[in-house]
Image (cartoon, rainbow, N blue to C red; front, side, top):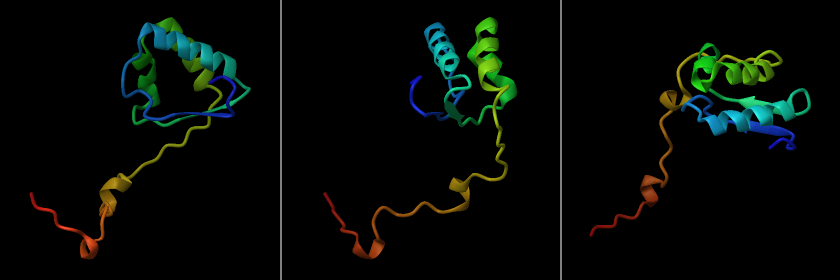
Length: 100
């Protein structure tokens, strides 16, 4: 994870972190700092990341390597999942009806 060009962390903050996970993330972000790109998607506001990470000293170290050198894009508006109906998996006209 420290060598790939772009590391993508999706749904960041959806769960709290264990001690092992905090240590692993700190090591990964330390190695990647100012060398490789990391993209994080999150619904959790950045202001709540410290609490989600836990262990204040490690949280400070992790966020220092992430937030202070980051470009932030905040998306607003309704979810695209809400605005468009989900496409059907099978065209209704070509669907097979199976009854048991």
